[in-house]
Image 1 (tube, helix red, strand yellow):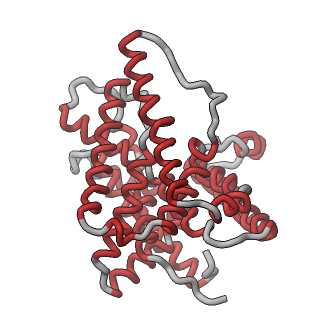
Image 2 (tube, one colour):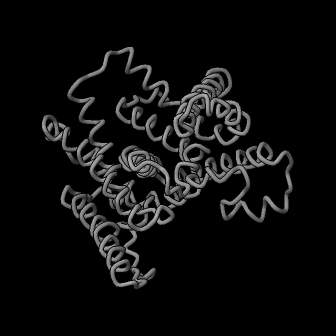
Image 3 (cartoon, helix red, strand yellow):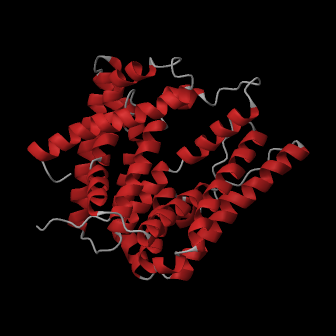
Length: 345
C-alpha cells in the first residue's frame, strides 16, 4: 500500500483541535469558571471566551473525519474492521488510564462503568464512543455524501443555526424575562442537523469537497476570523446572562466551520515552505496518539507542570503551557512507537 498523501491544512486543524481537547481536561481551565464575583470583568470575559473556543475541539475532529472518510466508498467488512480496531483501542487505553488514575484495577467496577463512558481516568475517551457510533453508520453517511450539494450544506448550516442557536437563545431570554422554564422537546430530533457525529462529518465533507477554496480568498478570510471571534463573544454573553453553570453551546458549529474554512483558505493563499509543511504534517500524524496518551501521562505530568503556579500568576496560562508540554511528551512517545513498533496509526 502506498503512503497516503497528507493535507497540511487538515493536519494544522488536528493540532489546534488536539490542543483544545487537552486543555479541556486541565485544572487551570476548569478552575477558570468557578463563580467569583470579585473577578475583574476583563478576566471573566477572557475566561468565558476561552471556554467557548475550547468546545470546538471535538467538532473539528469530526469535520476532519468527514472530509476524509466520506470521500470514498466503504464495505461492511471495512466498517467492522474499523469498529473492532477502535473498540480494542478504547478498551485497552481505558484499562491503562483507569489504573494510572486509581493505582489499581477493579474489574467489576470497570465493567459497570465502561459502557457509560464513566470509567475513572478514562472519561476523556468519550469521543471514541461517538466516533464508533459514526463508523457504524458510515456506509449510509457515504450514500448521503454522494448526493450532497452546496445547497444541502447551506441548508444544514442554516437549520442548525435556527434549531440549536437562535431558538434556544430566544427561549433563554424569555425564561429570564418571564421567569418560566420553556425548553425544546427532547422528542424533536432532526438527527442530521442536531447529532454532532452526523452533522459535523457531513458538513466537513461538504465544505471540503463541494466549495472551491478560491471563492473565499481575500476579504472573506477576514470574515471567517470575525465570525469566529464574534460567535465566541456572543456565546460568552449568553452564558454570562444564563449563569456560568449554564454554558450556551448552540452556536459552536459556527466557530468550528469558521476555523476549518479559515485555516484552509489561509494556507491556500499563502503556501508554507516545505519544511514547515513537513513539520505540521508530522505533528498532525501524532495527534491521535497524543489524545490517547494524555489521560495516562497527565496523571504524572499535570501536577509537575502546575507547580509553576503561582510563580506563573495565571493558572489557566499554566494549563496552556501544560498542553504544549503534554503534546511534546506524548507526541514524542507516539513518534517512537510509530517508528520502531507500528507505523500505521
